[in-house]
Amino acid sequence: MATTDLLANTLAHLKELVSFDTRNPPRAITTGGIFDYLRAQLPGFDVAVTDYGAGAVTLHAVRGKPKVLFNVHLDTVPDSPHWTQNPHALTVTADRAIGLGACDIKGAAAALLAVANASGGDLALLFSTDEEANDARCIAGFLKDHPAYEAVIVAEPTRGEAVLAHRGILAVQMQFKGRAGHASGEQQPSDSALHQAMRWGTAALDYVAAQSHQRFGGLTGLRFNIGKIEGGIKANMIAPSAEVRFGFRPLPSMDPDQLLETFRTLAEPQPVAFAATFRGDSLPAGDTATAEARRLAARDLADELGIPVGNAVDFWTEAALFSAAGYLCFVYGPGDIAQAHTADEWVSLDQLDHYAQTLYRIVNRASS
Image: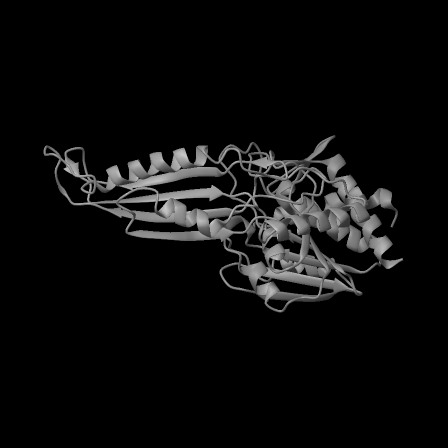
């Protein structure tokens, strides 16, 4: 197959991949459906499909003895009511491909299939389905067998540049306890659970503002968001309980455990319950020295593969899971994160083509 056919074949695969409903939630994904399609496109590969339950499925395909693993997730976010077309029917215009997951990140999956068909070189692929729900069963399960790869390239929309570093992400749920009573009387600081939550919120915002000078690899400060506060009964009753859900995104140089303890103890009285409901390491994982060494090694790999290096990003990816397991890792894919999770999601044809051409060159060079 000529490389001039790569884009056409990528779009043909993308049309099929977009047609499969892999929204997450509800993540009603089985080992059939989209995985039957993938199997059929990978003749000559050793293919293993693993079901980790609750719609979390992986397909690991290997041809030859590759040193680098390409990972891409197939699940998408749910479509919004603002779509102007069927989200599962790919539309191709003069400059873009439009469809649910086209940017994040089925476009990369389609290009990987096109390259697999167009070349006979050594190649390893891992398709997964649980990235969009903060439920990393797939990668955690895959890594239990300690697969022997020197590096992992994780596909996410990075505008065709290698992203060597990104923030971590933690989601936290905490509860405050007060004492129900009539609101007409004088209150002590510990009486109202909602008052406790609000004092904590003020302290948390002040603390985050004080971290604005912190930096790593072009990223600055600590990202923080109070997403939900719930509690109380009515205006003239002291709130006996309150729940707060918040999230923060630390720099790779920040200690997540230390930050958790700081947030837990910011105000008195302290919350009666405090737990991280999701935790994702930053990229690269490790202490400051280790993270910097891994970032430089990833930069050398990107240079060796001829992939331009881009800036660090604020969004989280599963590359951090591979990094935490000790793999050299960076993020690389077509599309812009600004188009991900949007109505009428799209990916540029130029970026799809360039991504496929780059992969083709890497696979052929690795086998020559």
